[in-house]
Image (cartoon, rainbow, N blue to C red):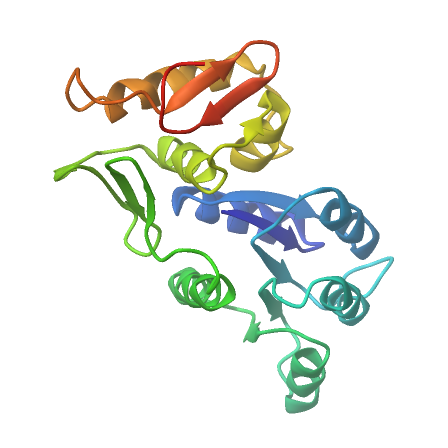
Length: 227
C-alpha cells in the first residue's frame, strides 16, 4: 500500500513516514500543496494523509482537487486545527476522517486500516493465485497451509505483485511503489528482494514459480511456466 503524506513540518512528516514503513506501508512526502498535487497526478496512491495548514496550495483546496478527480481514495486530515468549524469544513471538502495534533500513532494506524478496508471494497478480501494466499487485513501469507514469514519489505513487494497479477511491472514502477521516491539506491535491490521472495514462496521444490523475469522489461506475477 502506498500512502502520500502531505505535511509541511519535516520532523512530523519524517516521523509519519518512518512509522508507516514499520507498519509495512510505502510512503511519499509532499511538503506543500503544489508538490502534493504534482505527486498525486503522477503516482498511484492508496490513501492520503493531509495537513490543512500547508503552503502554496492550502489543504482544503488540495482535498477538493483530489476528491474531484477520484471519488474513492481515502483522505485522512491530520491537523492542529481542532475547532468544530474546521472539522466540518474538512469533512465537507471530501475528507473521510479528521484527526487533530498531537496524536497517537497507534490510533492513526488503526484509522488508516479502517479507511483502507472501507476504500477498497472492490478489491478481493483475500488475494490469491494458484495455492498462495495473502490476507491484507491480517497480513498473513500462506502457501497451501504453511504460513510464510516475510519481512516488511518482502510483504510490500509481494502484495504489490499480487495486486497486479499478469501485469508486467518495470523496476522503476516497483521502486516507486514499494521503496518510494526517497530511495536513492540502484534497481539491483529489486533483484535481491525478488530472489529472497522466490526462495520463501517455494515452500517445497514442487511449488509453481510465480515471479517471472521479463528480460529488458521487469517482472510479471502469474501462475504458469517461467517466462
